[in-house]
Amino acid sequence: MKTAGVVGAGVIGACVAFCLAQRGVHVQCVDRGRPGELTTEVSFARLSAFQQPTCARFELSHTGMLEHLRFARQFEEAPWWHPTGSLAWGEASESPSFAEVVHRLGVWGYRAIWCDAVQVNREWESGIAFPDPKTPVVLFPDEGWIDGPRLVSALLEAAQKTGFLTLWRGAVEDIEVRADRVVALRLDSGARVEVDAVVNAAGPGAPAVAAMLGAPMLAGIATRSSLVLDLRTDGDPVEHVLRGAKAHVRSAGTGRVRVRSEQVDARLPAGSGFEPGDEITKDLLERAYRTVPALESSTVERSRLGTAVFPADGFPSVGALPAVPGYFEAFANSGITLAPFIGRTLATQIVTGEVHPLWARSSPDRLRATS
Ligand SMILES: Cc1cc2nc3c(=O)[nH]c(=O)nc-3n(C[C@H](O)[C@H](O)[C@H](O)COP(=O)(O)OP(=O)(O)OC[C@H]3O[C@@H](n4cnc5c(N)ncnc54)[C@H](O)[C@@H]3O)c2cc1C
Image 1 (cartoon, protein in one colour):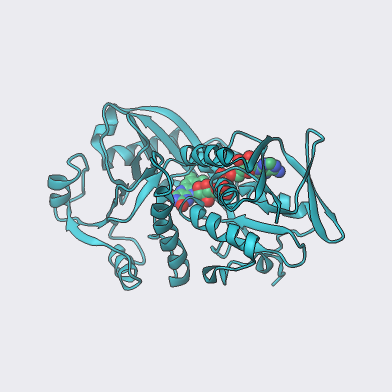
Image 2: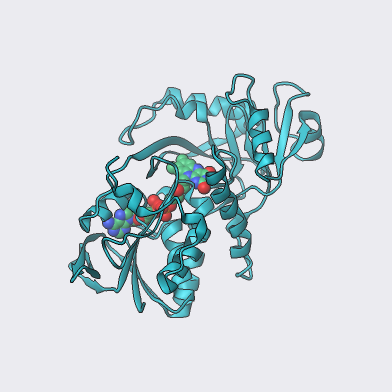
């Protein structure tokens, strides 16, 4: 493999491009926007396996979290990586109950430390308002968050330094296949970029890129929208990632906090082409204030609707599509958590043909089956 095209420079495309360049493959990475500015930018970007409902999906996310440590250690500094740990507590009405979820995670080998609200306020986070001093809280010490755009720019810069990466600004409009092999990318500028293989890492654009090759994704594709607010704060009121019963809150760098809420997201209409009204924004702000009262003096810096697009069965689509030699897919939910692991293992597969066993249920072929 001499030259690989990577369509999309979000967190997944950047990880794949970096790992390919490290292995001496010439990478032609194309993005129609600013690298990292789409889903990766608006993401809550928590490193976590908490929400995974099955052992197989947990295993993937847990591996992805651990890979971030290994990844960060390749760099002298990793300013994008915030291994803060997270604090979580639930609501009595949740089903399955918060305690059941934590128990299941423990059985699967996830580190979780039970404590209570008083201990959290005394030892770690004095600014959280809990419903009751006895509220059971769990510390997940291996969780944290990632500054996605910062990771993307660090990877692209490092890959460019190897001399094996060329970055293109433009939309891929077609993928040329000759004698059943991928041979070139066609950009909206008219440029033709020769490649021996292509990786579809186009995030929400991945189904459209797959369709260019006559390999449409026929199985279910899910979308999930979330209202995300960035607040400007006096000082830094939280250190850990908080998965509170009413809102999720984390630092977003000095003097900034990012918030979202599952209950608020459940009120959003389906699809992505709408503006969340003032009432929904107010609901999210109030939930954030009830979680961390100091946020009442913050100001809203940005309000955005983030939409994730991913295979509906919850597994990523990672690997080759045998029907189109030279075509590889890297399309996932929880992409922040999984990106470095996808990058390393997919680059290995492209160079050596070796498929990592954890991708057994993530083959792109399954998205082409009609039932
Ligand atoms: C609100 C929200 C919260 C989330 N929270 C978490 C979380 O806590 N933890 C977690 O692990 N994950 C989370 N996710 C999911 C995670 O953010 C995504 O899985 C991940 O960012 C996807 O990265 P990506 O590189 O695939 O896509 P993107 O970041 O969307 O990048 C795709 C890139 O492809 C480019 N592109 C598309 N089509 C073309 C084309 N034809 N030609 C050229 N370029 C093209 C786009 O311009 C874009 O830059 C969340 C997502 C959302 C929306």
